[in-house]
Each structure stands twice: as C-alpha cells, then as structure tokens.
Amino acid sequence: MSQDTVAIRSRTEAWFVSRGVPHFIAGYSAARDVLTRAVPLLSFVFVAEVLGAANLAWPWWANALAVLGGLAILVAAWVGANALRHRPLLARPNSVGAPEIAVFVLVPALLPLAFGGQFVSAAVTAVANLVILGAIYVGTSYAVLPMLRWAFIRFGRQLGDILRLLVRALPLLLLFVTFLFLQNEVWQTTADLFGPWYPILLGSIALLAVLFLGTRLPREVERLSRFASTEEMAGLVRGTPIEPALAGAPAIIDEPRMTRRQRGNVFLVALFSQGLQILLVSVLIGIVMVAFGMVTVSPELASSWTGEPVHEVASFELFGRNLVLTQEMLRVAGFLAAFSAMYVTVSAVNDEAYRAEFYDELAAELRQAFAVRAVYLATVARSGQRDPDSRESG
Image (cartoon, rainbow, N blue to C red; front, top):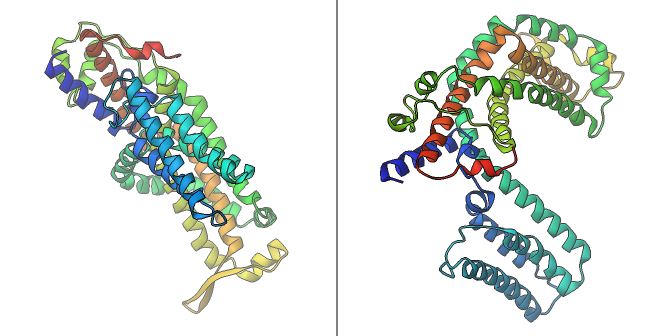
C-alpha cells in the first residue's frame, strides 16, 4: 500500500470517528481498536479497586500484601500478554482479549474474598467491574464523545431553525398541550404518581419514541445507502478525505452491505442528533407551560384539582399578582413536555413540515457517510487488503 493511500485511509478513518461512525472503519475490532484505547482508564480503575481492598481492621502487613499482590497480578498480566504476542514486555498492549478482561473483572473481586471472606463485597465488585467495562466499551466503541461533539455542532447550526419551527409548525401542538394543561385530570394523574412511578412514566414515553425510530430506521438506512450511479456517489464524497482516491477507483463502486454493529452505530448517530433537537423543543414547551401555569393556575386552583395541598417551590410578585411555582405544576409541565417530545419524534419522520426541519439535513450527512464508506472500502480492497467486515455476522 502506497504512502498516499495510507494517508488517505487514515484521514478517512479519522473522519468516520469525528462523525460518530467508527464502525465504518474496515476491520474495526473491539480487542485491537476499542479496549486498547481504554487500557489507561481500566488500569486506573483496577489500581483504585486494589487500594480499596485494604481493610482498616487488618494489620498493616496484610493490607500491604493485598495491595502488592493485586498490583503484581496486573503487571504480570500486562507483561505476560506482551510476551505471548512477542512485543516489548512493558509496551502498551495492542490487543485486549479474554485474559486481560478476566484479570480486570476478577482480581479486585477476589482480594476481599481471599483476605476477609467478604462474599458480598466480592460479588458487588465483580458486577461493578462488568458494568464499568461495558460502559467503557460502548463509549469507546461507538465514539460517544466525538458523536456528541458532532451532534452539538449540528444542534448549534440548527438552533435558529428549531426556534422558527416552534413558531411556524408547532402552534397546533402548543394549543393542544395548553388545553391539556388546564384539565384537572392531568393534574390528578401526575399528582398520584409517587416515588419512582413519575420517572417511569416519562421514561416509558421516551422509550416509545425510541422504539418508533427503531422500527423506521432500517428502511431509512436502506434508502440512504442506495445510489443511482457511481457518479452520484462520487459527487457526494467531494470535499471529504476520501476524494483523492476517486482517481483510481473502479468504474463501478459496489454498495457494501452493513453489519449489525454498523446499523447500530447509525441508529445511535440518528438518536443522538435528533434527540438533542427534540429535547430542546420539549424543554421549550415545558418552559412555556410553566410560565403559562404561573399566570393562570393559582395554588388554590391547583389544590382543588389535585385534592391535596400543593408544595410551593418559588414565588414572586409581578404587576400586583403573586406568581407561584409549585411541584405539581412542574410535574404536569414535565409530563406534557415528554408527550410533546414523542409527538415531535413521530412527526419528524412522517410529516413533511417537521421532516424538513428535523431530519433532512441529518439524512444528507448520513448519505454522504455511506458514499464515503463505499469509496473507502473500494480503496481498501484495491490496496490488496481483504475487508474484515465480511468476517462479522451481518
């Protein structure tokens, strides 16, 4: 592979990561590309847990042995993995496999078990390590931080469009939500949801919106990843890092199939991007409802609707009227904001007025990413490297 091709491929892979689709990289591997980047963080967590295994009830020498034993196991695992792979013994591992994962999960859990017989502590530590490992894997594998950065940049560009949408396309929604806000049944329903039930209600509404997107996304991905001609594909990659590779590209560039992980990656990108927009709309609607409620719904009226005394959060005087913010008002506004978010989610896919504001720009960027991926994989294949994506279960 020529140096120019290596440079083009490297810049293109960085372009994929910056847009939150690292799984578009050929041969993307959890052992090599994901967990190796998390080695410093995993090591820090491991050392912190080993130090935490010390027990003030033990003699100092027992604590010292526990800590030194845990650190010795970490160093031995590090050196042993490098020795098996014929690398410098203290070099940072270039692959993290099952043995390294087992050491990270089990060793800190075994220390309190071995030195104090603390079965509950050992089990909690092992489960916590699995959760930490899963969170690090997902966050690193799917480039969550670059994805968030990309989504926030798009969010900033579209902020004015979203505010205009509130004025132009959402009056009917605001009218309907305002009508619901003045219904005593809504106040009674939210007031009766004690403990975790109110968050469960809001979470269920959000889950329904995500599930709706999940049912529609496969068809959208299929549509966006299809191109009428190679010329259309070439036009989409203009201005991207892969553009120089077009000169040596084949006359016909295939549309490579996507694996499950790649489809999941695209789903997360769409979810992050649209989620930020819809969250802003729902927050603005919630603020409007709170402001409207403070003017129109007095504590006495709210109390008559809920049948219970209301809980005041804040109050102030404005033009001779005492405006009171109550917990009950915030609960109603939160419920209606969540309902509005689900409505906007559905409308953003089905309604042309909403779709143009919420979805079309994202669809154009995803379509460009699919075109870049097709040219990139053709470049990888032309360089003589087999596309490792074919080894994954699709």
